[in-house]
Image 1 (cartoon, rainbow, N blue to C red):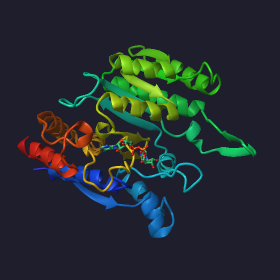
Image 2 (image 1 turned 120 degrees about the horizontal axis):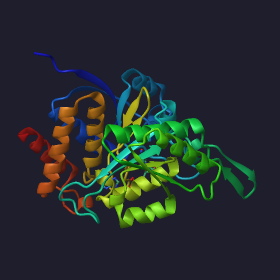
Image 3 (image 1 turned 90 degrees about the vertical axis):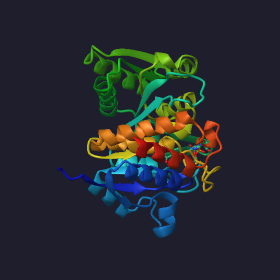
Image 4 (image 1 turned 60 degrees about the vertical axis):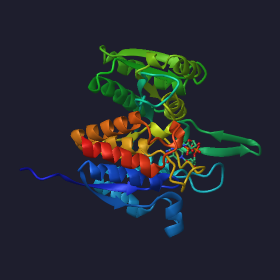
Length: 340
Ligand code: NAD
């Protein structure tokens, strides 16, 4: 009999609710029988406290070695205070150019819509996240929006390739090229050109403000959404709101060599340390990671266990209208896993 594959994956528990939900995800992965040695690393505020560097070399080396990481959210202070976003730095360091966020209803979770099944593909390395900001005179500042043909082409190619591989039928490029004629205009022309190479995939364009309204009116018209970094960030949270909130939406940051899996949500400081955060988004991020590792059977078993546990109700966390704790929902999912 063939032995089980043994994986080594970098684990960043993160700040706020991070350790609670990432702890749940690693327990569920172990219960599914996937043998992973977690290479535990700190980043952000915890790393500053420990050694002064929010992005320690040890963490960088760990991800270089393992190529795959599961990550909790990291806090970034608002405004001038504190260090630059470690999330952005990680995505740039490992050239994780594609941020993938599947948005799907979970059975039994009350939300404004049923049957939502779309995928946000967000460019992850440039745009207003370039970090280039300066004061040009007192009271006048500039933040530079960087859009390149290279990054726009490769994220468009990613979106169309994803559509083909996952039997999706339409890519909608979302933009504001009526106002940002050069930057969004370049992004759009790259998407258009890429679209011509994929004649079987329908290609559509929509201005971002209209897209937001269309999403909350008729989300069923969308399939794969292709966005620059900032619009992708905002529209992801909007889309999470369509299917029950941030507690249920997973994500993946993907490059050609490395991959970091993390939920869409942040550190949720308002509920941190109370054992009430919803672990579903982190667990489903681990499911994306297992697919990436080629552990499709385990990934599908976990996804089914999440869906069954949540559909039965009785174990829902507060964000989903229940009264259960992080631990109780995690146990319910593990019980379903054992039954499968
Ligand atoms: P947030 O996602 O942390 O929280 C927004 C709302 O959603 C809050 O009401 C919170 O309680 C709720 N929520 C989030 N996750 C939940 C969960 N698992 N279960 C139940 N409810 C949940 O967004 P924010 O408050 O704008 O940001 C807080 C911090 O997180 C900031 O420092 C921000 O920079 C950081 N952040 C980090 C990441 C990341 O590491 N990838 C992503 C987003 C925000």
